[in-house]
Amino acid sequence: MLAAALLALALTGCGSAASGDGMSGMDHGSGGHAHATASGAAGTGDTTGHDMPGHDAGGHEAAAGDGLAAEQGGYRLDLAAAELPGGSPAELRFTVAGPDGARLTAFQPEQTKPMHFYAIRSDLTGFQHLHPAMAADGTWTAPLAGLRPGSWRVYASFVPDAGPGKGAGLVLSRPVTVPGTAADTPLPAAAATTTVDGYTLTVAGTPTAGTATELKVTVSKDGRPVTDLQPYLDTFAHLTAFHAGDQAFAHLHPQAARGAAGGPELTFHAELPKPGDWRLHLQFQTGGTLHTAALTLRAA
Image 1 (cartoon, rainbow, N blue to C red):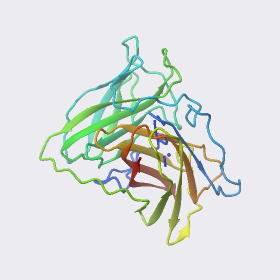
Image 2 (cartoon, rainbow, N blue to C red):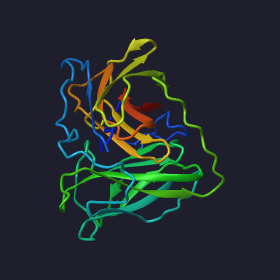
Image 3 (cartoon, rainbow, N blue to C red):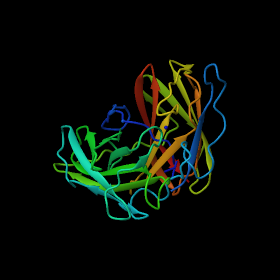
Image 4 (cartoon, rainbow, N blue to C red):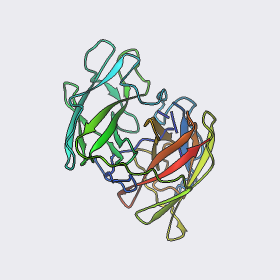
């Protein structure tokens, strides 16, 4: 998994390869509330219907907040390092501490994965979405692709299976630095259309901060509707968004995929918690290939 929660926004997917502007996906083995549905599922009718308000696609309570805190509800994100090398792949190790101070080792699956991990640069480029592996002692290892010099923020999205927050979605984050000469990339202007890997995605709908809004995303290729979207993390799309200026996080949880194929239209019921520009990253799969499209959306 336009529109955790378009927040909190809410759709998470797995790793796709990072690109300098977040427009192309790379596969790493990737506030308010939003729910998405996909129409045109082959042989099964469409996937209309919405998840229960305040819950994600897996039935968990949706994540609250904007994802900018390192600690929430007694759960804390701890990084092994606050500085990472640039230009080449790097492994970032981290743990989650529970309210009792011990490392948390029990997690509930969220869109088929116990942990979704994201990285974004301060200028909202370099998007990466990963599904790291956890060791028996509760240490997670995220295999990040090469990072450009500058300021970054990494996010852990998970559902505890132990402690007072059991079953509630959380998004925690911390800043990291990549040394070197940093040059920011200007945020692309707000637009209703973007392209990736030959696919065109068109967004209809104008979000207003703090108000539930329906956004429709239509996927086409060579001028024809795309109806062969494949299930990815049990959905037909995965969506995350970051707010320009403070990197607030929004994760959209879509309707579970039904059937072998979907498209061309994806509907998101989004609630953006604050006005301004949001950089959206929509991940979808066709022919066994994961694609990551990005565009800027402005909330009034």
